Length: 290
Ligand SMILES: Nc1ncnc2c1ncn2[C@@H]1O[C@H](COP(=O)(O)OP(=O)(O)OP(=O)(O)O)[C@@H](O)[C@H]1O
Ligand SMILES: [Mg+2]
Image (cartoon, rainbow, N blue to C red; front, side):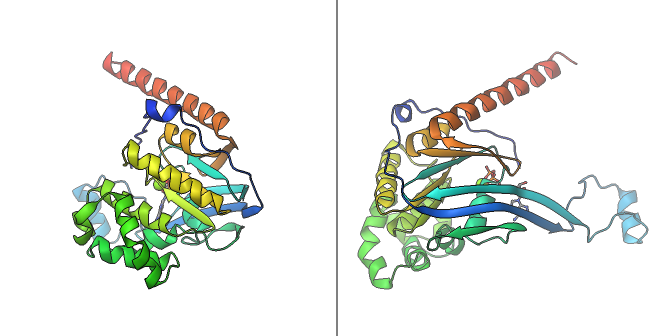
């Protein structure tokens, strides 16, 4: 995993502000949630000399092949989300954003705490079930069913989904032939076709152009009008600033800040700038031979 940080600031996004809606009843309560991944047999240093390999083969090495390595991906996170809120989730690579959404959707087991939700949060549907060997067309059906639509409803929305995704006739080709941007846009279009109580979007918007972002925002607004809550993970601070009313910042699995989107994006942007300065300083030292 790289430590790359996207810090794109898109001027056209900056003057947009998320539409404020009346905030309603709680839709999701996350109470002291922790998620720990257990990786069996992981955690070995990649350096392998002939000697150590031989020792391992003859069984005298100290390395324990079945060692269990633990990653605390989410640590004691608590918050309440309400109907009508659009919540952005910020954090550098590996900070636990996807894990948090997956745990809310019930796709990974928690190691502590609880999640209470109104209806079924849907992230699951789509990301979990789409199959790269199937055409976009088949995946729209599979994904739509996973989102709780009937086959009839999927057929009725098919044209809208294709139009929204902007993938055109590629919808009849296998998804493995899609660029990551096309696949992400199709995933978003399928997830947004239903109106779930809680919609969770992980990174899907980064790949779209300004026009796609505008349509996405309108769709998110429409979903929020139906008393739903939207979660949006994005590396783009500008995207979160323009699409969300509230933001959470995760770092090493901890919720370090949760509040109005302007406050959180400002603090996070400052953190990223400091990180870049540190990195530039370290590079400078290396370059000057220290
Ligand atoms: N299936 C898995 N098995 C083991 N460890 C995992 C698994 N998925 C994620 N992790 C680890 O959990 C931590 C959090 O990962 P996660 O994918 O939630 O981060 P993220 O914030 O979504 O990162 P990114 O911005 O790169 O998408 C990382 O240390 C990662 O290596
Ligand atoms: Mg992620």
